[in-house]
Amino acid sequence: MTTDPTQDPASFWEEFYLTRRTSSNGRVTGALQQIAAGLTPGTSLDLGASHGDDVIWLARHGWTALGCDISAVAVERARIRAAELGLAEQAAFQCCDLSLAMPDGPFDLVTALYLQSPVTLQRALILGQAVARLRPGGHLLIVSHAAPPPWTPKATPSTVFPSLDDELVSIATSDVPFDVIEARVVMRSAKGPDGQPASLKDNLVLVRRSQT
Ligand SMILES: C[S@@+](CC[C@H](N)C(=O)[O-])C[C@H]1O[C@@H](n2cnc3c(N)ncnc32)[C@H](O)[C@@H]1O
Figure 1 (cartoon, rainbow, N blue to C red):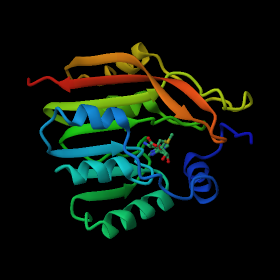
Figure 2 (figure 1 turned 90 degrees about the horizontal axis):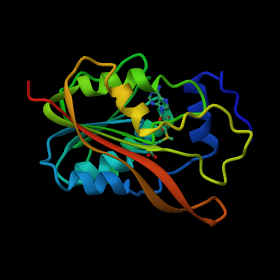
Figure 3 (figure 1 turned 60 degrees about the vertical axis):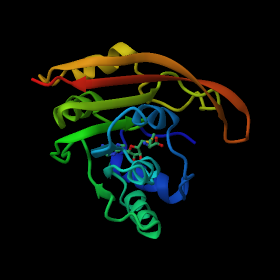
Figure 4 (figure 1 turned 30 degrees about the horizontal axis):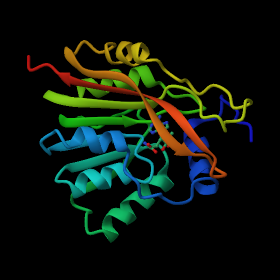
């Protein structure tokens, strides 16, 4: 299946969730699980929250968690799941295009977990604004695909696979001072659509907004 990189992002992702990813897999992102274990729960914002698995995991672990996504259908499914789990108060969701608007915060934790797209996505702008939404001392966690998975068709255009430096440059587009806590490439075992095993390369960047 080929993607037109000029397609409107809202319609691309709505169609994606209506036809290609129709339900949640219920799994938390492993890197989030590890990093959050070392943080005191507070308020959090997940950028590109999809079906809300990471937001719901945070809510279960004491956070007051908010997720934003451009897809109305993904957001509605996330809301329904949170309500079914009795977590509607702790796990909230908003449908928004993060290139145009982002909740104000401030937040103790902002996450951008595989916030990548084969159609237009202003990642640098969004990540710069994300660090500005942190409370002083709050953390921004970015996990991104550093390379395409082997099963991605060669014809798939335009998804950006950033380097660690790219991620840090994006965050620095804001004037907000921050300290880099971790910036490393991690390998992750995964299975492709037909069950084929692969080792995937991710970027993991954790920064903390300076206290002043
Ligand atoms: C590759 S998926 C990752 C989803 C999820 N964070 C995960 O780890 O599985 C990217 C997500 O970003 C959302 N997205 C793409 N562009 C967006 C935008 N401009 N504003 C808000 N969400 C966006 C998509 O709808 C999709 O759910």
